[in-house]
Image (tube, rainbow, N blue to C red; front, side, top):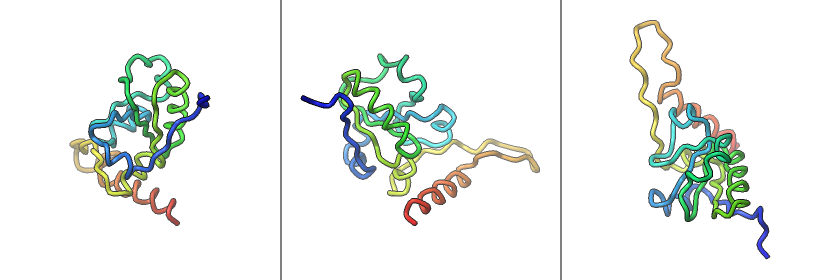
Length: 136
């Protein structure tokens, strides 16, 4: 008998073999997804997943977050409801670190002296810092 909480976990390189044909759901917040995301990913924040269970397509669903924690919770939730769910270990941080594509929000136009918030360069530096901590 299959464990109802059993779901598969893959590394980003394994996802890359089936991406972009695979259904990839990013369970981070809308803001996180808007700032940086895997091209073609569908954004359904973890806290909305239960109420939007009709939204995920049938077939294998790959789940991604920032590090793998929220996506493993989502994988458990979907698996318990009969979906075939696969957690992407390390999330978008490891996806980026492995050299796979990430789409960044365009930096907003701003006046001199204004702080521009998260620019793509700033986000790339942040992702590099996060990935170097994991390898240290």
